[in-house]
Image (cartoon, rainbow, N blue to C red; front, side, top):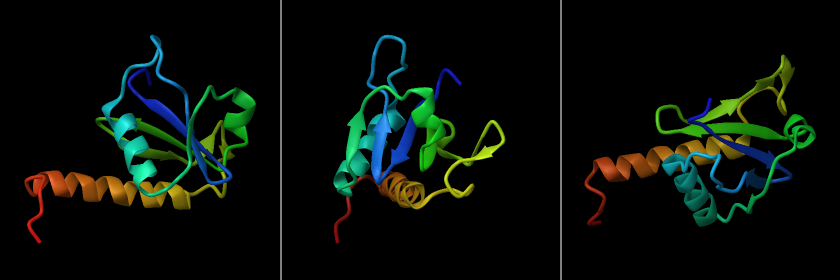
Length: 110
C-alpha cells in the first residue's frame, strides 16, 4: 500500500528506492537501513524496475504497522524459494531485538 516501503534482496544486497516526494518517509524503512548497515549487509538506494522486482531473491514491505513483511509470492509466482528468506529472518530478528531494547528503557547497564 501507499504507507509501505519496498525492499528487495539481490545477491546478498538490500535494495530500496531512494526517498523522493512520492515516497512516504518511513521510520521503519530508515531503521531497516540502519540495522542492515550495523550488520554489514550491503545496501543500495535505487529505483527497482519491474523486471528486477520479479527476479529478486527476496522482497519485503516495511511499514510502522506491519513492521518488516516478507513477500513470498508475486502474482502467484514464488519469490525466491517461496518462503521468507535468510536475510529477512536476520533483519526481522534484529528489528525485534531493537524493539525489545527500547521497551527495556533504551539503555542496558550490563
